[in-house]
Image 1: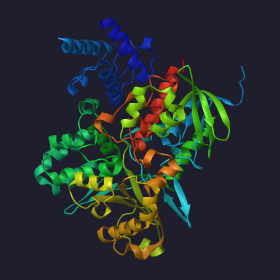
Image 2: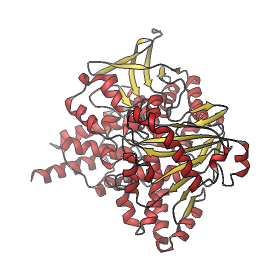
Image 3: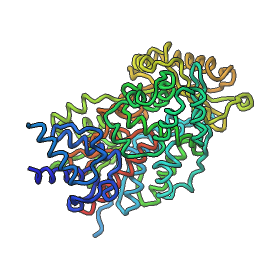
Image 4: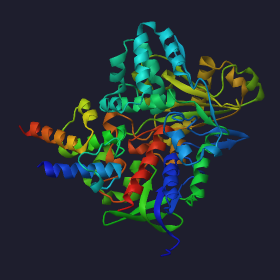
Length: 83
Length: 471
């Protein structure tokens, strides 16, 4: 499941930032290497929430600095949702 | 391979500031770019017009985010600064409330001191709040993404009058009371308009837009004025060009719409090209309030007798309940208006005044414009500028219908979509995922408002296109 999630989140980040999906590697820093500033971070959060019908707590957002962390958070929220 | 003259890499519909910024960056990168604008001058809400020898700013009347924000950085980056003489008015804004008069100075310590001496019991909170806003901490911004500005203020302050004073310029610059305004947008407006505001291009706001338009042409871009776009052509879920009213179909790979989002989707693209769900989404979104703008041309005596500093945004607050103020503005209860802003031009030749106002139809405004002008002048005369009417030699006003006529913004909305937390950073309104190569830019994207906001979005959209162009 998380492989698919990773692909989908890459696609969202690519869409928002304009960076090619190949450039969005698991451990790149979203803010410094992919130029995700606060409004883009909110844009990505809103898009993820809409796609997976989950709600990400505001205080979790600043802790997400890489793709890997984003995938982990979404995976755990989806688990919570189904359990 | 040489290509036909009438094809472009990108067509931008609308020469608002965001369209111009986007166009500059695309053209600078070597793309062949056409900007079409239905009005006969560039700028959108950032234009000026001449009447009887006076130059009036149509809507935008000062610039923020210049020293610390995106505006200064982008002017430098595009090498536009030398075309402009930007003056800084200090203080940028003065708030005149029933019991207080407080100014925003370029020295922020001074601003903090003024607030502290007016509200000594909130001394520490004021310092904490303003210091937080000037740090531009992204963590702070993300933490408040789903809050309203009211919730943010409640976390810091107890005094309701102070909260109203901090919120009123946001009401005037975004059309929402704190209970509805997104905390993120509110914080941005606060940072850009109040803590880094008060800049003015010598000669008027049109000079600012013209500088971008000129630079765009120097980069090889083509700007067609008085040129209305009728359709955005879509083939296989991809944009292929734009149909112009006078020039027919013009081919282009990318299309950037700097105009009203409803019009972009419902008219230019067409309801049959978008999904039922998205159509429903667009139709349920709420636009911001419009405004009623007064333009006064003043005689020479005014120059001598106006003793306050010219160029300052003077915010007059009638009462502290901004929820009531919002209701009055939304319903057109003008006898009960919560406040307004007055801007005497730096040369003291003209006076600009703005209040939030509802759309209503043309017939309403045809029969109410004159009365409201007189009521507004009488209010300013009794609240801020004594004997104002003695110095007026020309007067006119823009109603929400006027704003709509000149800019085609839906219902004359002054700030794009209403900046509520639920209408923030909607990706489909900047780059719709269902249509390839279509972008929106400007305040209808839900990504920013005011000159600093739309300058940023224009830059961001261009960067995004340029990165993708390599594909």
